[in-house]
Length: 146
Picture 1 (tube, helix red, strand yellow):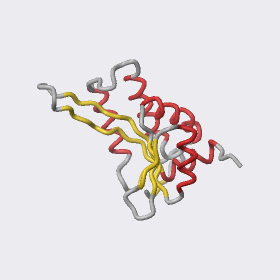
Picture 2: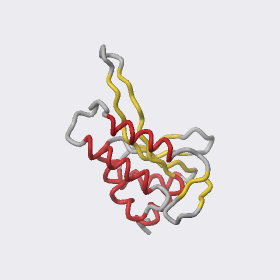
Picture 3: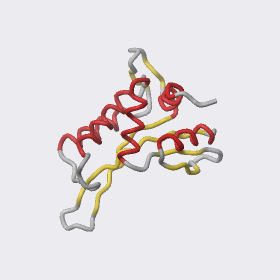
């Protein structure tokens, strides 16, 4: 039986993450800062991660825990397609997804290592704030312990 997009979105809401991986290239004299947008899901059940992999690409690897697996997107295109499909069903991670989609749309058509501007740094900061552990507000306007 196929797994619904709604189920995958709810699973991602609970077990997934949206992030920008900050990279600095030191090969150039002036340096070059850019970010790689990524989404991922970590879980002990590898079969559910294989569903993400078959639908959205990316890769699955052994996670940091003893019996943990991790699926992660590998490109801006994979990340964008994934988030656009998940967005209507997300509750907790909707603000994260919206920021990541904004970052991707701002950098589409550019070289992969397009230097960051002021708005990009603000998006990075906002995502870091949203990804902090602790009590967060979600769309239901109630506290959610993370």
